[in-house]
Image (cartoon, rainbow, N blue to C red; front, side, top):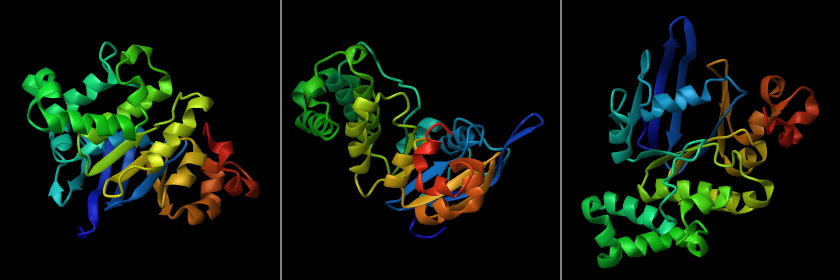
Length: 262
């Protein structure tokens, strides 16, 4: 593994009975990367992310984070080492406010989780960090609202803020704009674009406008197998990608929106 590589998967295989969901997939994420994982429905993207995050243990293959073998490591231990994931579906505490939620996560990160409710008022570093995250993710105006009352776009922003509060080295963004109404997307897209440069990001997304605007490198999965990898220009020009993912015909590469629901 090169010194510039933060996350590396080698020869990952995942079988469910007679079905091979992931077939000899290798992936390398470099420090500060903006890397997109794309492919049609059923390509194996979610299985691969579940392998990287420890939800699944591979049938074969190896995963390393910062040079350390984490193939058998439990998900929460991967988070503690800096591998953090957001989910397609919100997983938030509806009865809490964004401020309370972020204070809880920041306190836990600082080893103060047993007294987070006191730490919010008494520990300046917790309050300051929670405040920074609220501002960064455009949540300051709804900081005191219960999560259950937030617009869906704000809920997605809060989910990414929680992930960043965990101080990730590698952030896996799982379809961050899924289900977000058009009127709420711009704020979310701007926030994703402004993520800290020292956090390496692997984006899993169907929205090709976001993918091509965000990624400096792309990996394409088809039927659980790595089809190709390269920069956005190479991917857009690849006839195999156009055939299986971006749509048929030569116009597809210049019109990524056609694949938004691919």
